[in-house]
Length: 282
Image 1 (tube, helix red, strand yellow):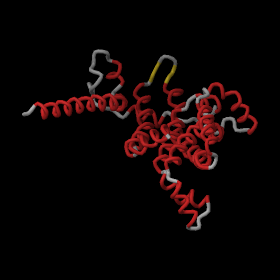
Image 2 (image 1 turned 120 degrees about the vertical axis):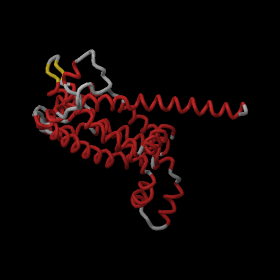
Image 3 (image 1 turned 30 degrees about the vertical axis):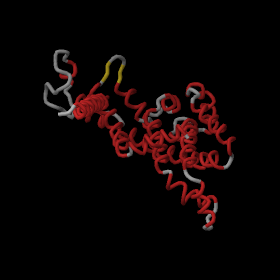
Image 4 (image 1 turned 90 degrees about the horizontal axis):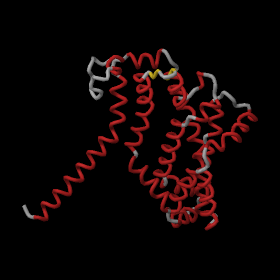
């Protein structure tokens, strides 16, 4: 074997080893949640047992507790409902705003885009008091609609800035050709620009839904009824009693809520990365 060929094989081996190590690192949290979900409580509490395998037969007891002794199914539905509504509102506002800032206002649009992005960097704790006043004025306390009203305040700015990069990457010639063919500006936007920007729209959908799923502060303070909780509030509230952690049910709740998002990420990972990189550099 020539030195050059040996060097290429060594490079590939190192790359494969690094990728394998990264894959193990990325998948380990899911493995830990999965194995903890089905372990018996004595197996979890025994410090001398191997924590990475089943030392006792697997059990469904933790899953039964999660769905039978708590309102986990209702919390999942609440999270899905709020996520779908917030994604719809975010797309409804961010799509035309990003397009207008990218196309219709020149360099002023860039400055406004940066200003909008900076609003995303404001800590949620600073916005809590004014947003609580808005929720109180609208009479939305203890209602999921309070989250639907509040969450777009931090999803719309970032999504608008992200979509600006996509719209700038689309050649103006395509829109001008559509206008010459008789389409209005709105028609060219809907029939030409939006279909080309699928990667950016998917990025916004995944980003927004992930934020809604993991948000804790507003969901905890704006909603009191247990039946109106989201997953991020219901799971730690009912499965952590003082210093007692129901690890099996906790991990089951986290695993069930995270798997759909992980599947969506894996199906659209190329478009998601393209969305963030394009939105960042344009």
